[in-house]
Length: 124
Image (cartoon, rainbow, N blue to C red; front, top):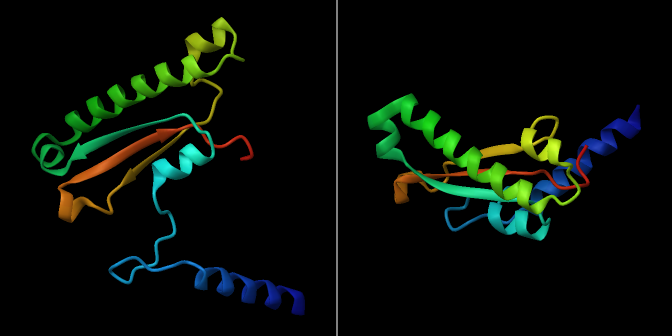
C-alpha cells in the first residue's frame, strides 16, 4: 500500500519539469505540428476564424470539418503504401485518427487551429 503513495510523488515531479510560457502558464502540449513531425505522423492543419464560426455557426463548422477531413484522408492514403486498394477507398474506416482544435491563440489572433492526425505507431 505504501508503494501507491510513492507513485503519487513521482507524478508531482513530472509537473515541475514543465516550463511555463511567457504568461506563466505551464504548457503541456506545446507546438502540435512540431511534435507530429517528430513522430512522423500524417496530419493536416487548418486555421479557423473565430468570427466566421460565430457568424455562421454549426453549418460552417460542419463544412470546415468535412473539407479538412477530406484533405487529411487524401494525404494519408497517399502516404500509406501498405494499404490495399479496398482499404484506401474506405479509409479511415477501421483506422484511428485524432482531431484537436487548439484555442490557445484565439483571443490574440482571432483564430483557432484545427489539426487532424494519425496517432503515432507506438500508441495502443
